[in-house]
Image (cartoon, rainbow, N blue to C red; front, side, top):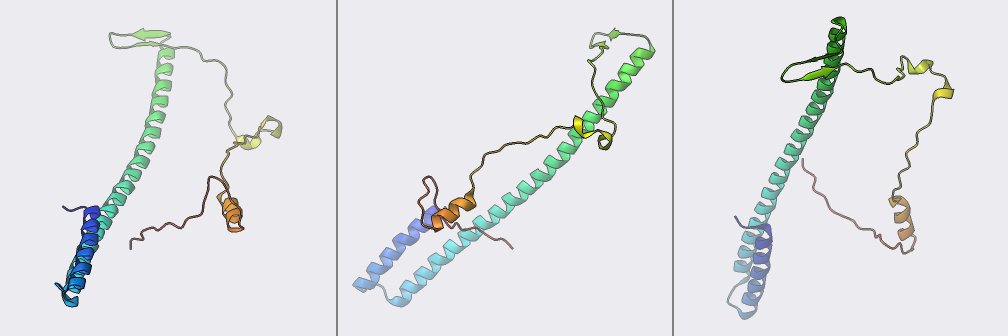
Length: 169
């Protein structure tokens, strides 16, 4: 399969040959137009093939994102199950008045954790027990830079450009 780069290179060389053929009379205008149209068709087909490949990649990305969401939900569910099983084990060992239990595969010991606060209802907590968390993130203000450059200022390390994108319907 010929690469897009090679097709574009061949096309440029072909147009030089057409130009020389028209100049020295070895090719008439109709022949030149037919050859150019054929080469343009090859280039268009290649671009469309690449666009279809891009579409497939986008679908793969969407599928991976969905799988990621499903896996994250499964992780949370498994974490909750592990917590419930831990509580069940502690309750069972305490009911048997066992501080430890073991076999050849596992050794379990019940330990008392340090004290911790459990919030039953946040809306009932007085404001004196709340703290504000502010995350300071430093970021470049692109809108201000754009305005500055458009007003004629030189902003080192930045420039305005207009990129192109593909819209797939």
